[in-house]
Image (cartoon, rainbow, N blue to C red):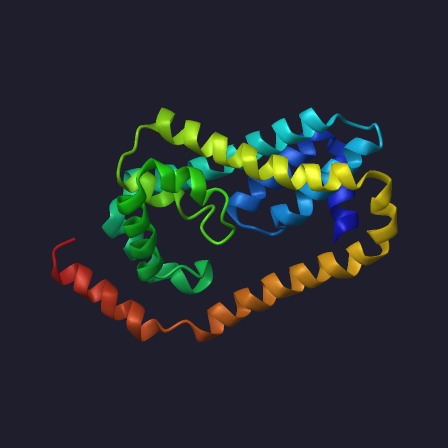
Length: 212
């Protein structure tokens, strides 16, 4: 899998990094924990600068959260929960996940957006309650950009600082990256298989009875 990421970077340069980070936020096919360290390492080879790597990764990540913000903004909490109720099995998103993200946002406010961008499990989902709460887009983008920049910088610098030492662990990167992808796919299949439609139908029915 790391070969695939490198091929994208070799073909599209820094734009490839942004594209991969954008897709990682829309539907994470490849985790940023793999993309950015490899991009940082590529910067030590002279093909691109570390600053360009960080900027591209941050922009791609930022662009990737905007669709989720607008989904929450236009659909609202109840419609987002209905969407999760209808398609939650394939999105691996339950109405209660929306409730948890909304609750965290209500308690933490703008700080939830900033620090949420640093937490792998909520990095994308935190955009939904920000949209539901009609948080000002400029404010959302500022806090998201700061959080994204911190995260991408941290990961890129890991690869960059390894420098030549990266060659020592390069032999392990293929198996490790493949293991990460297998774990993601396995977790997705597990969520699909174990998803409880009865609970989801009950939540959706309650929403309808409440007139949402």
